[in-house]
Image 1 (cartoon, one colour):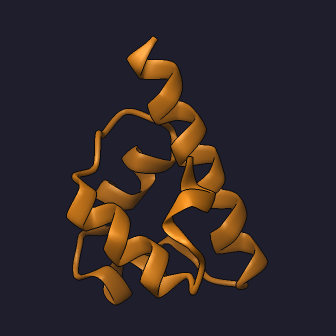
Image 2 (cartoon, one colour):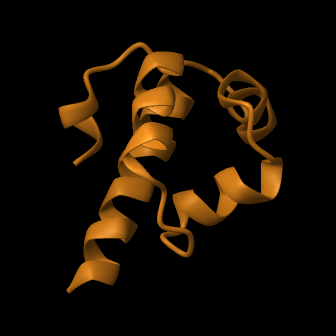
Amino acid sequence: MHNEIYKQIGRNIKEARLAKHLTQEQLAVLIGKGLNFVGKIEVGFSHPSLNTLIDISKALDIDIKDLF
């Protein structure tokens, strides 16, 4: 069940990132993380901390609730 939640969060991040016309690399720079980390989040492999989700929501200029 938890894995499905992380996969959905990853899909939502990817959708928001693409809507902002950002690459994974650009998002990684904005949040101070590595490119591979962003890729793993988007497919639900990595489980980002709340602080990372806050950073992502700020970088994408969206409400954090939109990631869930």
